[in-house]
Length: 117
Image (tube, rainbow, N blue to C red; front, side, top):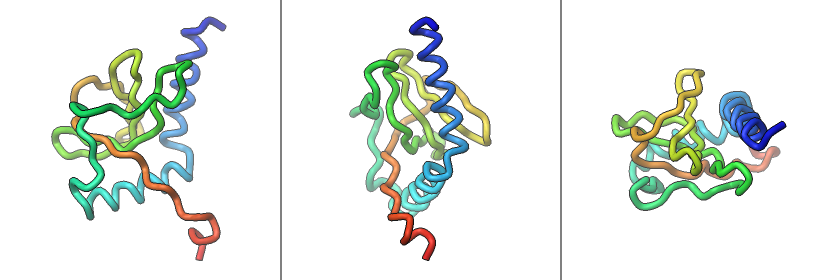
């Protein structure tokens, strides 16, 4: 498998994790709830900085909460090599370049025991 094929396989895997990973989905929901309660508290402008690279091999960030210029919030990964976002919106993965204006890290999940009390 070539480097590009391996990279796109990892990107596809990350896209599937965005939607299907239960813990990340719970973190996303918690992040959206926090974002609505604290509109500009933890948001970072993409003009100031982009999400840090998680893995130098593929140049992708970790999953973050992203916000468009219209205020739509969704999970996303920033691809530093391609200079674009991969986001999941309405159960569909989209590649977009310039519509994301802000991002924030997903909140830390509570311990499993606390989640099910």
